[in-house]
Structure formats: structure tokens, C-alpha cells
Image 1 (cartoon, one colour):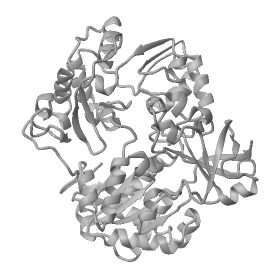
Image 2 (cartoon, one colour):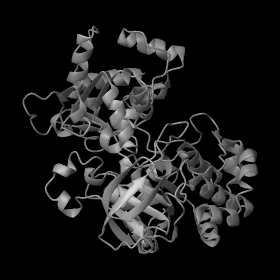
Image 3 (cartoon, one colour):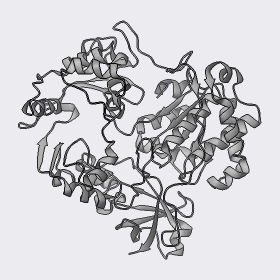
Image 4 (cartoon, rainbow, N blue to C red):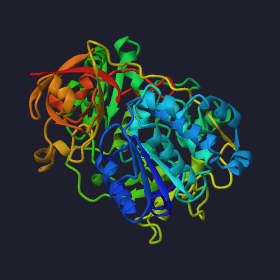
Length: 531
């Protein structure tokens, strides 16, 4: 996130929420956004479903799944055509504007309305509302990212913010809501095949030399695989062994049948987990890890805020901290790594990661920062942290417009599979249900698979609300239960991916974004029949 949650929900005149249902997926943020609207903030919702916040929105664009890039280009077309862009910001802080203007010239409201299945008047109204605001924030989530064009979708939102000068000041920016509690921290720590901690490029010889010296081991210049590429490599016999922790790909990866095949072909599978998940059941070795409340450390949340996590309860005998497990495996494989405390690990992070250089457990434990933390970049021990990114200039100097043409989704409906399925979350459950499925009360609220269908689609198939149904894609079939309403448009359906009794990811496509390799969870061609 370029900005803080607080200034988005208190300083923004307009919030544009796209591909996100925060009241269910990020409920604290969702509550704060609802409060902001109640206090006068204008809200634009771009979502194929009727979500809770769409009822509060000034404009709800119920666009066709997979058309985010066309939508953003249409917004920019209107803004440029009506002279609503920030000319000073464009001239002094950006480059590539002419290329952007040339591309979006073809995305007229009439054309975009047809692509997105929306009213062109709503598109124009949304563009005007966003562009005329003194401060306008974009908030997005996996409904933008989880497409075969997800990278283009995110870049298009950045183009829109630069076009209107909505960077580097309160209540603005482009703000992703991270899918889990420490996704941001994992990325920051180099959990990507092309970066080392702090997004320092693996391809840079000086960076590799710095880490090689600190870690007393050579750092390979060759990139590894992104997580979604691992299963294909395993299925081909190119990956022989796999260590998985805190992840349940047998519930959450696309095309579960393919995942099961890939895992079964491994020579050796190790899973470090709290519970015997579906993936752990396939492991050769299960290592019992510990939960967040059983260990010390830090999390970095969606707004780049680094906060202390303190041990609250004693762990079960026989379990181990993840850091102990990792270190002991390294030692037994011949790398004489000392066992470090979490505070010592944080000191090492600070010594090697410029954006974290001013952080330590001792500083985060001070009365001033307890419960508040610090936002990176925080380059020195006396630095207050950075609530807003790109103030005055971008990290690369000028902001580069990155025009992207609309491309249809990888798998579109046809005569055999005429419906589009999207996936997402419900409030009462979380991801693979590893914890919420074991929590008294959650299953009583929502405890089984279901599929939302439009009234017209259900009637055409003789399906009534509550009926058991069979849902089929090119990859498999599951049994679920129909929830019939107007929440989705005709021809479109939606399923939560939490439930093993009818796992939506048996059906989903493993088509990947070519840049970041995120699966296209949000568009999958299916058919539904009464069971």
C-alpha cells in the first residue's frame, strides 16, 4: 500500500474499491470503509457481485469478470477526453503519457460498456467522480490480481492514479489489501525467486556479494520457481522434493487434481504445520510447528506496518518454532547456522535490508511504538517510518506509465460450459479452514460448500434455492448447494473456496499471469446441473 488505512478512511474524498469485498475478506478494514462512507466519503465499487458495500456506494459498476483492464482504460479515456487529468503532475513527475493517451483513445465509453457489460453513463460518472476529487484512493484486492491479466490490471490502476495526480499525499494512492496477515512481510523478506530481502535484485552482483558475505555461503544468480510453477515442475519430475509450511495447496491451489498428481510424484514431501491438513496427509514427514501466539517475532501488515508479535501462550510439548526447524535442517545439511532468537534475526534483517535498517525488537518494544509499530522504509534508528510512499518523487525518479491493452480471460464460456465461475471468501471462514474449521461457531454460520447463481440461470436449469447441484468444469466435478439470487449477473456464478466437501479449486483453471504467475481463480468456465 502506498498510503495508510487511517488516511484512506479519513482523508480521502473518494474511495474506489475494485475487486475487493473487505467486509468479508478484511472485516476491520471493511468496517472502517463503511464508517468513512457514513461520514461523507464518496464510494465507487467495481465488482461483478452485489457485495455489502455496493449498497452503500454512490456508483456500483457490476462489470463482467476479467475486464478490469478495459474498465481502467475506459476511465482514463473519459478523464483525458474531458480534460480532467492533472497536467502539472504528469509534466513534472511522470513519463510515457503520450503512449498511454494513444492506447486509451480507443477505449470509448461505448466500447468499454460492451466489453464490461455495464452502462456507459455509469462509467462516465465514475471517471468524473474519481478525477474531480481532491484526494482519491484506489483500494484493490485479489479480484484484480487473480487473473491471467492481473499484472496489467494492477499497472492500469497505477496509470489511473498517476493520470490524476493521486500519489504522494494523504487519502490517495494505490492500495492492495493483502490476502493474509504476513504476505507483505514474506515478500519483504525475499520470498520471491528474483529478489533477496528488501526487493534487492538477485540479478545484481553487488547484492549477491553482500548477502554471500553475510551468510557465508555463495548466492546463486539463477532464479528459482514461483510457487505456482512448482506443481507443474513436480508433475514433470523436475522437482523431486518439496518443503511446505503454512500452506495447504490441496485446498487452495487451482486444479486440485493436478496438484494431487504433482505431489504424489515427488520423491519426498515435508510439511511443517499446526494441523494435519489435506496437504499434510500426503507428506512423508510432518513437522509440528507453532502458531503465532506461541512465538516471538514481527509481522508486516498490508500498509507496510511492522509490528511485534509476542508469545502469549505456552506451546504444546514436541512442537518447535519454525525458525528452530529451519535452522536445525540447515545444520544437519552441513551449514553450521547458529540458533538465533527472533530479536537477533530482526537485527540481521536490519543490517541487510535498507528499508528495515532502523528497526529492532528493542525499538518496537518501546512505549512510543508499542501497538503502533513502524512503516517501512525506515532507514535509520531515529527515522519515524514512512506512512506515505512517493512523496515528492517516485522511487525510480519519475513514474512510468505502463499502457496495457485489454485481453480476454484465458478460459471463456462456451456451449459445453456456458457459465463463468468466480471464487472468494466468506466472513465466517478463512482460507483452507485449517483454523476456522476447528473453531466452535464458525461452521454453524457457514459450514458447507455453496454456489451463488443468478435467478435466470437457475430457472433455466430447474434449480431452486437450496437444491443440491453438480458443478462441472474441464478439470473435474464437485457437489455443492445452490444459493439463488440476483447477487451475480446472468451467466455468472460465485463460490467460496474454503470447503472440502465441494472444493471450488477442483474446478479452477491453472492459467497463469505471464509475469507474476498468479492463477486465474476469478474466471473459470463451468456448467451447473441439479443433482
